Amino acid sequence: MGRKILFITTDQQRYDSLGCNGGRIARTPVADSLAAAGINYHCAYNQNTVCMPARSTMITGQYVRTHGVFANGVPLPADAPSVAAWLHDRAGYRTALIGKAHFEPMFDPSGRWPENRMGHERSHGPHRGFDWMELAMHGPMAYFHYSNWLRENYPAEVGGFVTMLSGAAGGDSGAPEVAYNPIPREHYHTDWIADRTIAYLNTLSSNDDWFVWMSFPDPHHPWDPPASEARRINWRDLDLPPGHPGSREKIEKILAQKPRHWLDWYQGRFRNEEGGAWNFVPCRMTHDQVREVNALVHVKNELIDEACGRVLATVAARGWDADTDVFFTTDHGELQGDFGLLFKGPYHVDALMRVPLIWRPAPSAKMSAAEISEPVGHLDLAPTFCAIAGAPIPDWMQGSALPTAGGSPRVRAITEWDSQFAQLGMHLRSIYRDGFVCTVYEPSTRNVGFDLSFGYQALGVKGPLPDIRYDGTEGELYDLREDPLQWRNLWNDAGHARLKSDLIADLYANLPPARAPQLTVDAPA
Image (cartoon, rainbow, N blue to C red):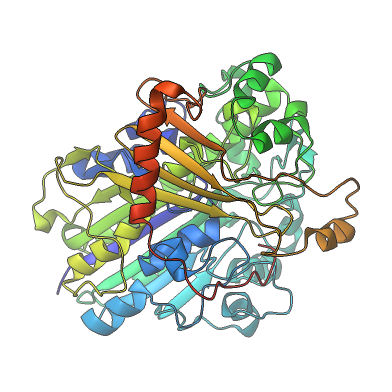
């Protein structure tokens, strides 16, 4: 009998949301205890700031340009490598994914992809190396297993959820995609995922080695947690988050230093279709709306933490704790009021790129607790799982096993962005190194991805299509040691010209070749 692996992911959770990472509002004792007993990576970066590319990196251990899922709406190929399949085939692990997968587009009414057919077909896999899948998304959308369960057992509770990407005003302040959901807590998808993970674990024999990916859709918008829990944090008691400049005048002054789509989004000339509600205009958002969104995000994070505690209690009750490695991370962050903005998108700042990453090694491995400041990435997770399982790390994985002590030779992390809509055509490449984040804006394209005009027609959107064009000379450079909020763009600062050139050369020297031919965008998200 070897070591087991519980891999916990959330969706759109900030690094600073956890107490162990400086969070002071949400109570996260379970995650904090994992960090205290294990290894907390303080400079963990994703390889893309939206769901599907980031999750595809987790399962393959590859850079985005290698696995090819460069944006939401690009399905991970059916023959893509999978760490779950590798652990199953090479190390005899039982494998399961419970919750949000999202390696395939979720807006798929015809069921083109297996993730979207499984619930409708009453199937649980196998798929992508997982023996068992029970899938959930953001509320009771489509035919995922959670959606079917809620509709069949508690149909009156379906209407309490907000439609994702609707931008619908709600709550006390009229904030976008906010609601106090009358659903009982035990029927909400966070507790459902914990319940189903516990049920799966209880199907395993004591001697099984297992890899279980427990994947929560929260704290991603819409912000509609159970009303019975949502008032545990009073939004009226909250200050604006530290990254919020405090006034429209100061927001606009900061955003004017950045490439054009930052200020244009804030003022309503640019729609951030790739990262949030198409009808959201940030400058119209009130301070109270920022506070209410933040309060509900913190509540969601507390509910996740409590759900994790229940699952870990089951692991302990089964006698597995001493031999179970536990990981906790997310796919990307959330602006959550930083710069006066919400949601995510083509904005390469720490709010979206830097992620919580905790590894509590199995106590039987006798590893010391550690706080690690060297940069690591999502592509390092799959090789680490292999090392735990005693399986060889395959050549197709591009990361390496996570360091277990400070002082490792790691120096950089790389994050990319490529638009899924032809009219947007943005291509961002970022490197974190030596306390700096440097982002190159490659020349814009107009021939890759969906024609956004069809989407505008379907939604009844009036007004011109986006016309942001970058010629390759634009960019961003931040000194996180002096400017952790990333309010001062040093890209055109003469005193940093040599450093900028060095970082750009380092970035491109370490990017693998782009996949050829490029995969296509097959669905909107």
